[in-house]
Amino acid sequence: MKLQTMNLRLALASGLLIASHTLAMSLNSTAELTGVPPCDALIKAGLGKSLLLPTEASYDARIKSYWSLNSRQHPFCIVQPRNRREVSKAMTALLETEAAGDWHIAIRAGGHNTGGANNIDNGVTIDLVHLNQATYDNKTNLASIGPGLKWMDVYSKLAKHDILVPGGRDGDVGVGGFLLGGGSTFYMGTQGFACDDVKNYEVVLTNGTIINANATKNRDLWLALKGGGSNFGIVTRYDMEALPNTELAYRLRTMNVTEISRISNALVEFTENYEKHQEDALVVYLIHNATTGVDQTLVGSIQVNTGGKTNDTGFAKLDKIPDLTPSKYEHVSMADSAANSLAKGGTWMAESTLTIGNDKRVLKKAVEMHEEFVQDLKKRFHATQFVTEFFFQPMPSMFNNISNRKGGNMIASDLKGKNALLWTAGATVNTDQQDRAFIQSLLNMMNVKLKKYSEACGASNDLVYMNYAAPNQDPLGSYGSKNVKFLKDVADRYDPKGLFQFRFPGGFKISRVEA
Image (cartoon, rainbow, N blue to C red):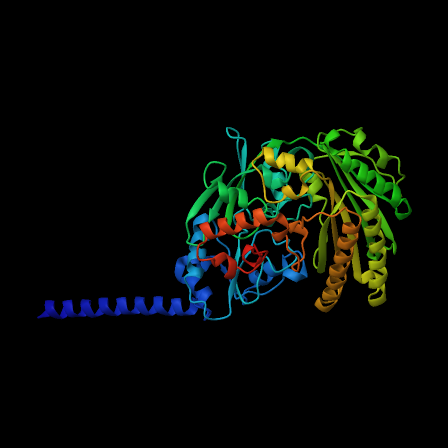
């Protein structure tokens, strides 16, 4: 009898213990749930520890880390996968969740895009910040780079192996969006667009499958990702061909705007003869920044020789133009150059871009438009409330030749047989979103006028460079009907349900482009 009583007590105790444990688990699970289906789906998928919620300080800090105010939207939650498998798990969990509510998904790599592409208000942001590896295999000469890195970190990590890869000039720019949009670098004269040096992409598809895309496997996807943007899956690793980590010869100059005619002539000549000095890189810019105490437009140039030469003839004409302040060529690493070239963030940003012929007349018109733009802004703002910058980069036809040698990309065919210049107009304002919209409207109208003028001069070009394009522009459509059809076919093949087209609305979508 005593034994039976003892067994009964043990059974009751065991039952109570199990019930208590089950209840505790249930309570903990309930406490963890957010009431938001996609966020709860991530928790149930085992990604609760990778989730940031609006009630947490870490969420607020992550939102504030976006470069421009345009991108500081507030998703229901942020998920930060720690590896490719967690990216796959997050993708699957979100896409299998009932989407009856008004919510969608965004993907963040570096967070430097000016808005709409890398964050979302109603939905979930997949933040790739922990995919931050930068390793080197000396047997293959490939550097493997995670999309969550910024370029200044890529350069510093790869410098330990005495190598680099062509990447962003501004160190705060992220890897992911930069490479998917093409990537303009100091090394374009010898290497082409940055995407031309990507030998392999590791991609998570919408069904959760992880694949590699390269010249021999999934070649069509490999080609489509070189300028095709965010249309096919989440890239979790870029394998890029490495270059020796040689120092740059770098010169940053400021000149009087009265010299703009001579500077423009030098830029056109530089572009026309690019094949004779392929190690050189040049950016010419107009800037009005009264926050520095100088309420006038200045013209500047960034002159770089990637071979470290300080006496290259490519800059001969420019070097004859006097500086406002003394400057000279300095030998710097790519890591130091990027770390010291950080555009100020934390403001509202407006931008627009256009590719124009390598023509002095069109260049002159763009310069005149900048001054008109500044005067229009001064009618609405105090001079210290805004900053303008127009910059010009050579886009010679030889970039297409380099791309073809490396397997091709989606961008460079527009440059075939004709030298061009990339015009990018940008302005920041430190007031509010309504003022940003006002500035964006001015830039949109200016773009139309400059396009018409370039056409009248017989000096137009169809290319709209994705990484500088405004949301109202159509970079994918500018690639031509053949490439548009190709991109649509690739998207259909790797994402047959079209989930990347309507569940991931940010960025430029090929489904929105007419064939």
